[in-house]
Amino acid sequence: MVWGMLFSALWLFAVAPLQAQTEQDKVLAEQGTKTQVHQEAKKIFVNMPDSLSPLLTAVNRADCIDFLESKMKAKVENRFGRESEMTELSKDYIRVQMTPQSTWQMKLLATSDTTQVICTVSTACAPVCDSNIQFYTTDWKELPISDFITAMPAMDDFFETPDSAAAYEYNHARLQADMLLMKIDLSASDNTLTFTLTTPEYMEKETADKLKPFIRRPIVYTWKGEKF
Image (cartoon, rainbow, N blue to C red; front, side):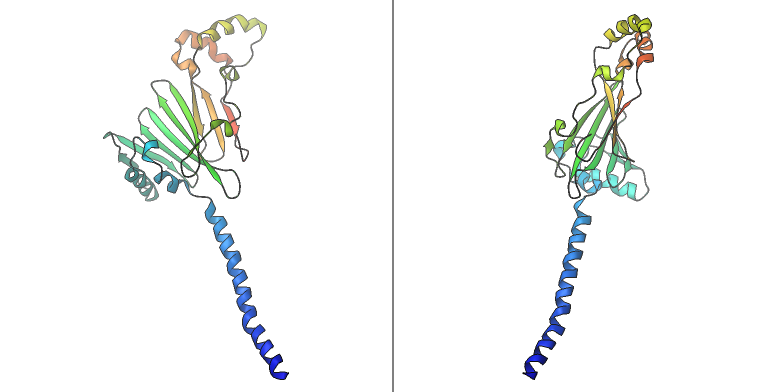
């Protein structure tokens, strides 16, 4: 009887710390997983498929990151033998001046504690700037834009409604704005998306000048965790 009690006490003394350590390891492992779930932009950028990066090779992309992290200008020779430069890099944001007339931005947006989506904006200025926005999973599978933006701004969203005295002048100028062109910018510092109307820049100067008093400030969308 005494030996049995002694054996049980020794067993508890030996096993209990092991069980506690196992539970502690499990908690630490879970915490480690949580901190590693959200990927950094630089890793996702390097792993971008070449089909989505017609100007920059995987080596170009990796070099850009290495240069910026070394406090150097991140200029590389792209596939066409021209110069491209990464101008901004953070954990969730990247901006690249692809050519003198075009830029590319990428932002990682959290949809929950464990998942993210990629938002990219490509802008070409030829000479008037116009942008294209896309969304992807973190392994670069394309997602529907409508899943993340309820509605893109329409032309009239950029204009203030004129009073009756200015209605004729506004309507005449507005009819000349027959093509919606806008520049889109992701923010490096927060989760906002800014739309700036560029249509007046392609119009005749006289008409554009008449329209400018009615143009609102850029439209800003804010990420709400699932959508802008």
